[in-house]
Image (cartoon, rainbow, N blue to C red):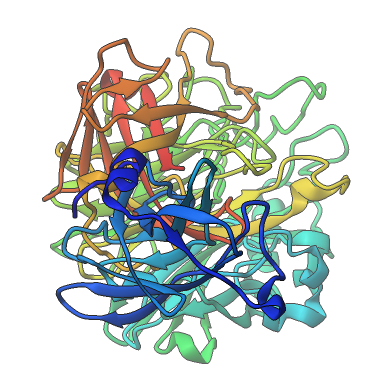
Length: 634
């Protein structure tokens, strides 16, 4: 397609005068021109025939008429343009689709003699019909109007917290979660709620998988209390937290769930009671009927039977060493099953399970004087190993291409929640981060794969972590989590309790590290990206935590965006990188290189745009993983 600038059009076009009847002299702009939105007349492999009706008032002359196009939604004659053929008040042209971007915007234009250029509204045109026909998700992020139990059929991904997702034999993805929702809507319908989807965009709510706490929890609790010389708790106050679900084999699925006893161990000035991890199984997730298989493991301590006291609210030296919540399961190629669990207290422990029963390989000793690895070996800790208040939780372990990847939630969930990742060649460790640091060294781990963020035109998201990692069986990986609104969005003082389920694609670096995409997954067709589509303005967000300033309380601020420009000649205009930085594009692998930094890109939904539309996003790491770059094409 030849590029025309307005001066070329002035030289190439003849002056023309079009008269209009009195009945037509309405709806003209200040230049005396009316031009309609272009319509696609015909699409063939060779080109798109496009036309637009127009009218010009008597006495008005024009010097050029045609169509201009760009990946920007308001193309001008300074972008690519083509001359049109005029007949009976209609201008027509053929756009060579092989030279068009995969998707672009087209406007008709008329250049007025000694006047301005008049443009029509834009039409979306492209070389790929899949993108032209694509419809972005329309469900609202602010779901407060449908948050209640009575509206559960409309939830989709509303009221999601700590999701775990698997793909089942029937082709559906099944999601299970913590009992947390806006206004505690879940209280009406049981526990460990389920929903399912075939496309990861549209989700059907199925209901709770457990109607009440199984009897074994209270029995086990009070048996242990009796051994400790403590009175039984007749009516325990339970919390239902963080299930993980896995397909074990065809026709067998297991869910490891957590029930926390919220009562204190021994009165007001003592630590809270222990948590229990249990097991349920089903042969058919679609039935939403699960059979409880009982106790697996509980919180354990190395302090003996009498050191339950908490002298003051500022004392965080918790009684329990390993806190039995946030389980995750990984299965090795030789069918060994490993359970990793833990939250805040001391770190995460990994213990082997019996593949046939789903329980621990060996009978567990009493949980109040552990001196060995009987309740699992330490695989990750944050800060000093003796610190029992570590601001890390929610591990999820998956296997891919020779490595076991552990995703870890850092910080408090209301805002600062962010995700780190480490990996190991063995499920029981040792795990290291991208810099080679051990996950048990006490250092913060890098890279940071998600964090609170804000693109322009939105309030952004916070509390993005405690993720579930899963794949579709065809090499495509995904990251599921909740996202929370910041505080006081739209005047709602409870907006931080809005918890929308987020699904994001994962790309993998050449070295095998996961890069989570900055925008949520929208099932956008995977049409090839052309280099010309990358030219223009982008928003850049950089996660730049500094180890020397990192604390266990974490920074609770959102990362904001700046605008950078990729210029057609291959240079970058940006304050983030030095003057003279260049860019290039590897179309075979969808990798955008900016200087020495690689950004792994793909098509995705622009969730901040209204109405939502298509864009290109990407992510990558620099400085050995200490900095995470998220980018979105404007």
